[in-house]
Image (cartoon, one colour):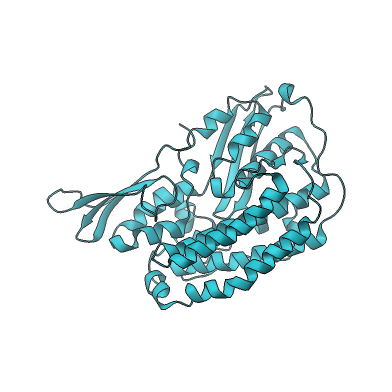
Length: 374
């Protein structure tokens, strides 16, 4: 937020929320000296907000249709995080098959988001075909979610003690068919983006995230792994079935937009590999355990922090129970706050106006994660 705002020397400008390069309903207020940014302030907007306080006024079970709205493109991570917290506080043991199905759902969600984000990185510099392909590929994944849960965007599928329903008949075949369909077209997407001279000129050496910023600002996910970090909750603190899967953490050390795009592209391949592993190793058995009367469900007093690895990095829930019918306190730790406020405001100073949307998209944010408590 440093820099001059002298009206005789700088030009003020709001970037977003209507600009297609802005992720979600947020906007950035900036001041320019010529075409160089001298100061930037993030404004989150008010589309989805106040989730934490809303959750503290609802029964434990009523929050599951609510939490998925905190990050629309990847709703399942909020269901998972909240379910883990409730289960650990109440001592609920999740059946083995349910753990594997949850892992499948989380990787399908990650695949869909990374396809959209990777294609969107191309779209923001004018390669609209990449954006359309990314959305189309994600739609194939949403078809699978519709077959599984009945919903394309909000699934409300993960619940305390397991999942809402078992995999439908023929679901494995459907998933493998989608993976094959996407895999056939990915080389074309690579030629359009990673191997494209224009894409490289607009991303290599642009939007640098210095490695020393990772710990200083708490950066996570592809933003951190694109600057050499190896942190990944799936490896560092395995949950569900991740401890039984064979994979390595994807990292790059270029520190720029190109490196972050490359991390997301390699994450697409990783998710497709993990999904195939999960389908091959999927055990049988029950998918959920019986729950008490949900209108009278009291969670024992205590506090817990649960975390998962979203497509944007570590995602955590701090949940406190006082033994009543409702949560005493809930705090959501999403990556968007540090990425879209602390980091973005620092990165934009000195950047060119033409690179604003390019930098913003490389950080992939969900604004409701920021405006969540008021």
